[in-house]
Length: 544
Image (cartoon, rainbow, N blue to C red):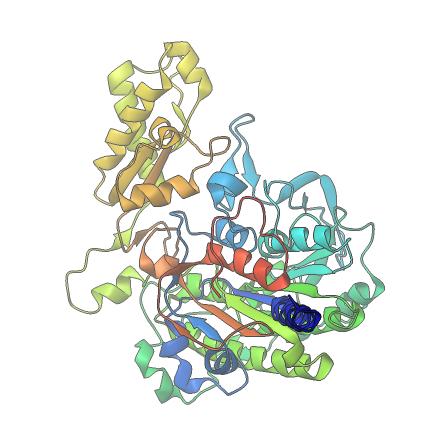
C-alpha cells in the first residue's frame, strides 16, 4: 500500500472514529424531574384534555413521548408498591415492598413500608407528637438515583418531595440527599438523611403556608356544565366526612375552629395540597441550586392529593375532574418556573402514577344495568377461613384464632396441632374461594414454587415476597373492593394498572407509542438516558 493510500485510510479511520464517538455522546439534562400523580388513571389525560391549558399536561402530550398503554404488572396495586417500581425497575418479589403495610412474620406486628424506629422525624413546626421514624431501609434494592450517585462520585443531588412519606422515600432511594413529606402542614424528613433540616425548610414551615388555607373554599374552576361528563355532583357512596361534604363548594376547616389535625387532614384531600407541594418544590430547586451545579440532579415529586380525592369521591366525580384540571394548571406553573430557572431544554421530565382506581359500586348501579360490583371486607375471609380450620382440625386449646389476619397463620397454631403449613394453607384457600367476591387465591407454598398457570397468578408472583408475604394471597373480582365509602384500589385489573407514562425534554424523541409497556421500564430507560447501568435487578427494558 502506498504512503498516499495509507494516509487516506488513516484519515478515513480517524474521521469515522470521530463520527462514532460524537454519535455515542448523548446530551445530558441538567435536571431530571420525575412526577408521580397518586391514583391518576391513564384515561384522565384524554377525558379531561379539552380543559387543559397549553403548558401543563399538553406540553408533555404534544411535545414529548407518550406511552398510551402503560401498566403496572404486579397484582397488589397500592401506593408503596407502585412507587417502589418506578426508579428501581423491580417488583415486590425483589424489592420487598409488598404493600403499604404488612404483618412482620417474625414479630407478628404491623410494619409500614418506610418505617424505621432507629431514626426520628425532624422539621415539624410543632413537636408535641413524635411519630415513628421513616427511611428507605425496607427497600431491598437500589434506585436510579442511587446508581447515578455511585457512578458520579456522589456529585448529583437526589431529592424526593411528596405529600406522602412512602412516595418521597421510595422514589428517591437509599443515597438520596433528602426526602421531604408533609405532616401537620409542615414538610419534614428524618435523621436518616440529616441531623437537622436546612434553614430554608425551617423558614418555609414557619411561614405557615398550610395554615393560610384555613377557611378557603374549594369550588369548581370551570363552568358547572363542563362537569356533566362525570355525572351528578351528589352521588350516593361518596365520603361525607372531613367537613367537606359530597358537593361543591367545600370550605376547608376540617370542622375545627382553628387549624388542627382535622383541618390538615381535610386540606390533604383538596388540590390545595398540590399547590403547597409545588411551592415547596420550587423552593427546593432554588435553595439546593438544582440543575445549576455542573452535573445532573434528580428531583422526584409525588402529588398525593389525587389519591385522597379519588378515595373519597371516585373517578367519575366532579371532584376528581376538578382536581385534574387544577393539577394541570399547577404543573403548568411548575414548568414555567423550570423554564425560567434552568430552561426546559435542559430538563428531562417524566410523569406517571402509582395506580389507578375503579368506579364506585353506586355509580355502576346507577346505570340501571346489572354489573357485578360491591363492597367487601377481608375480615369475612378471615371468618370463613377460621370456621374451615376449626372444622378440619378442631379448635385451638385456648379457643383463640388460627390467623393473625385473613392471610397469615399463627405460628403457635401450627406447633400446637403439629400441622404441615401447606395443608393449613390449602384449607384457607378453599374457604376463601367460596366467597362470592373472590376471583382467585394463591397459597404461600404455591407461590414459592411458582406453581401458577394463569395471568392473575403471574401478577400475584410479582407481588409475593418470600420473607414478607403472608400464607395466602386473595384477589377480589373486578369492581369489588374493601371500603365503606368512596373507592379503593389494589387489584390486578386495568382500571388499577393502566397509568400514564409521559416523557419530555433532553434525550426524548417525540411521538405516541401504542405498544404495551410497563412502569418497570422507566428505570432502565432513564438509566440509559443518563449513561449509567440500570439498577442491578431491574426487570424492564429501554423504551427509546
